[in-house]
Length: 340
Image (cartoon, rainbow, N blue to C red; front, side):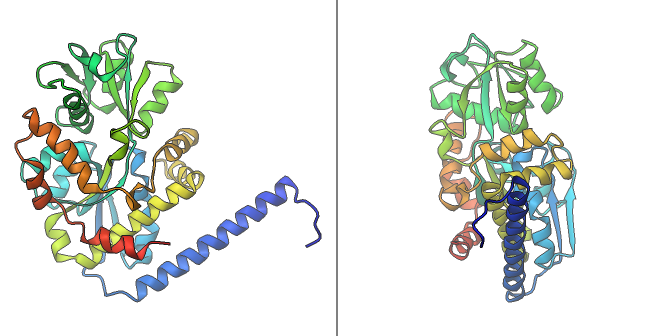
């Protein structure tokens, strides 16, 4: 080397070249690893589309899945309420979904099995000037997407944690859709709103409300997962090799979101999952996508299930949900395999 400093353009070319070489090496190793494994039981995988970009690892996983031998990779746009129903009914095989939104389905005995936690921090609780803490929500009005949705069940768990009965002590108003729930708060018809993924960025840009809980930062919420990987129970039983490979592709993609949020945000923008690059980048940077390596997903399920059971929102006790609706075998194997 001649010791001369690189120009800005030269530095960018060097970094891009190094990144491309690293990505090529990674993909080559991925192909080699997949080729050495048992054959897939099925080459089709149906992934239920989720409406929010916090589930970016699910979409980034597409290329890895194709390299892993899946010839038919489908993303099913079944609407933002229907994901758990589709998985339970066998219309979809697997998805990333928020844990609180899955709890009513698990409580109802639906054949859904949780395979891994991916990350936390999706939600931020916004409030008006009358509300400074969760306890101040007693007697107030909260806008939600629909009853039983993730924002409803998570906020109910939060209220129960601080001694407020979410069934009696808060007035809930439901919007016609996810967007409308936020607009009820923005329009002054609700005192608080639990924003998800892109929504907090939009409220900040519009200078509406203030944050009283950020689940990526504030304990105890920051200790627990938001999004988990959930699958149809029969699919996992009949296709253990395929299940493990799908989970691996999602977790590897979560690592990419953690180490290269710019690249993940550009992917989301190019694919029109979130065309506003800066909002996508802020979400990618704000979420702990490496959480799957260190946190215990069972603790998340137990924590929220206990709160909701105590206030009568679900009938099942935590031990029952854990024994009937979880399978951590694939996650435990992948934690060992993906140490590097």
